[in-house]
Image 1 (cartoon, helix red, strand yellow):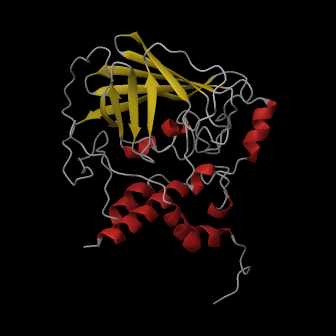
Image 2 (cartoon, rainbow, N blue to C red; image 1 turned 180 degrees about the vertical axis):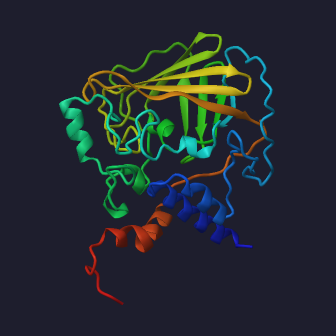
Image 3 (cartoon, rainbow, N blue to C red; image 1 turned 60 degrees about the horizontal axis):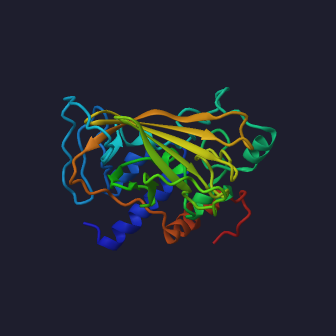
Length: 306
């Protein structure tokens, strides 16, 4: 059995490979080789293990009424972990080389988009040449936290706020429900400022502004400005199922709002599930670039042989 430090290094390198390689299906292969199975059963597969190595029971298949004004719980992509990967960009508009897969850019937006260099999709560059801020372990920010590596997610409700705890990068967001207004001239933050309200018994709507312009909207490099506003709609379908939609609105970059995620299905997991860590480690990133990333970017014969 691998010693703990070797396990951590192997998992860290696996994490970086997944973030940089174009095929999301490599996740399960690499994770298994590192003895780190995803804590998600998918819609039709057997169940894996949580962070404490305990088996996760499969979904019961029974449908029961959803509790009112309640989206709390631990949620997983209902169709399997790769469904939340979104390696080619926003779920509704993946950059896969097919026509008609781009949002409605303004002239300024298209110019900004062409300056980004993603490591996946039809516009991908070699790993060492990407300018993706997330690839050097900067926070990926919001709304990208919903639109890339959207995996096991915990939602906690209190009388004044809703907390969302993400598996990827092990970060959280605070969504205030105490009646305050969004700031008029906010100091930019990686994850912005969020307010939420119930529009009916089963639909929770969140408005967010104040996102840092250094972040990308998704893994394909869609840009945004400080005027970006994001609307999330969490709809509790029944007790065991939740849907998430994400609407992007930035008049500087896009001629009209566009839907980046449309009723993305999530399923409820047991309350005692322990969520695994997925953290971008600068030391593991350096190891990856030393061995794989930077050498791939070098022209043949440009380095001395040893």
